[in-house]
Amino acid sequence: AMDFEGRNSTEDTVFLMACRGGDEELMRLLAKAGCDTAVANIYGTNALMSTCVSGEPQAVRAALAAGWCELEAEDLDGCTAFLFACNQGHAQCMQLLVEAGCETAATDKANANALMHAAVSGEPKAVRAALAAGWCELEAKDHGGRTAFLLACNQGHAQCMHLLAEAGCDTAETDKDCANALMQAAISGEPKAVRAALAAGWCGLEARNLGGSTAFLLACNKGHLECMRVIADAGCNTA
Image 1 (cartoon, helix red, strand yellow):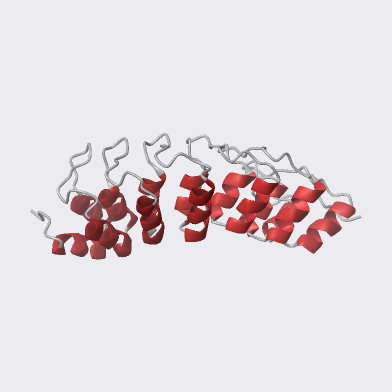
Image 2 (cartoon, helix red, strand yellow):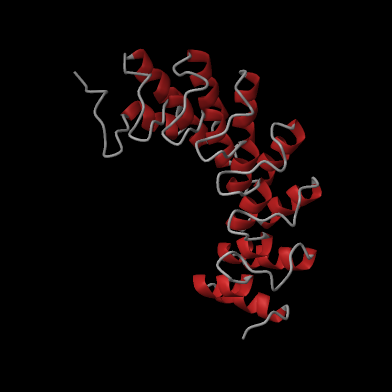
């Protein structure tokens, strides 16, 4: 007999791999063959969460219809399947979970909500969906004091930064280290994000974080050469 419950180094079974690959047909075949559908890997990722990583709506639909997993189950970081879908930027999968009645105000252990996860994904569609549905407070902060806008800056997602700014977020916000949008963009190493922050004038060029670093110094510290140039060209103090 075939061993369906063998696990790899992250304790994923062939069923979980099928889910993560969004292979609906294989998922059904394995379930029918009697594999453990309630299984989770070393990170606490279950079948439903895995289908959300795949971004395949059909796979998510199958997992929901079969009821293999608790809708509000959390992985080790406190992420639900819905937050997984947001984090991956899969707007269609997000919608399916909402229709299934998931908790849209859920936050993970870092206090990051759906909008923050969508901002981190860098997918404008996901950010638009979260904003339009009003699932989250625009100015909510994670435990690091970062709003969805600051997280978008930190990841260098210029389009998402603009969407959140257009939605009326506080663009002058800073995190717990007093790092503003420009500093976050400088840390990201994405010249597009740095240019966006400079062009919009969201932050003072010479503002300093708690460690006394300006956006220019943060870019230098990370070795982001192009960001250093962009900030220097904006007339910052390079001395």
